Length: 178
Image 1 (spheres, helix red, strand yellow):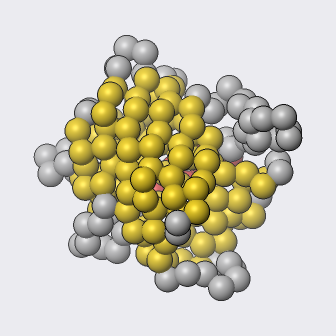
Image 2 (image 1 turned 90 degrees about the vertical axis):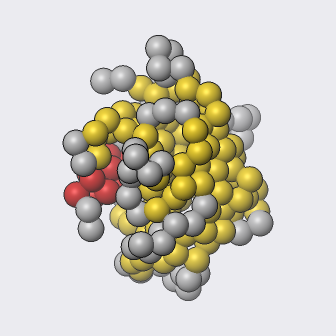
């Protein structure tokens, strides 16, 4: 597995907090700066999202991390790594500025243990992520996405699907600066 993915996965699991602890409405700790909404296998899903600059193969990119919670425990995670510019990027298992490629990974987790991971198989392109608006001064980023991700590793998820379909995705968040 690529070291960039392992670093990002570790970062995601270490810094995830609940954004919907109460019945009254979502509570977003400071790490979360927005919302991500999409259909996952035809069911609408709402995730808390934050963005962070990350380095991928020596280049500055954007990491968008969306977390879904069951009570106070994170149970699902969708993340993207993409170039830091507006445009539409095809989703592959790598990030490539010149060819306008981004990557996507989906995790089922139990607290801090990854149960299964989904991504795009090597040498295949499937779906897109679109950056409609990106203000590099404020860090505000708005866009959309859709893709089909395939089971890469099952570490103990009961009855994992071979693939998951993500449709009609939208997001808005702020990219945090270190």
